Length: 138
Image (cartoon, rainbow, N blue to C red; front, side):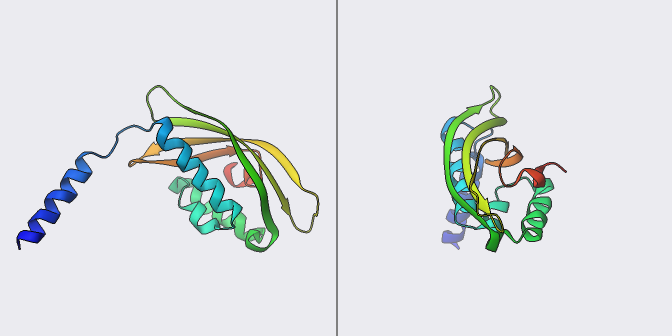
């Protein structure tokens, strides 16, 4: 019984200290994680880092193009990351290189990703350019 109370107190204290705004220190790892997941074809894991209202479009587009088999992200590099003054939005610019079968030509493009800070985490809301641009147009 005493252990349960202690656990409950620790959970409550942990929730009370969840950040209300995002920061540069939390943005870069979030963007890096998204890029790593697409680099290693973990598209389901990448979808978890996208705002809920865009997640379905991302997953549908990925399935329609059979990205698990056809898309290879060959390289990525984070170029810039900026957080808004209120800590609720952020923009990340990266260079992504990829190829999508049946093409054998590598494409490389500057990609602008917009993140929002929700429930203590950065989530991808929009992306311009790159292999997933169509999923974020809808």
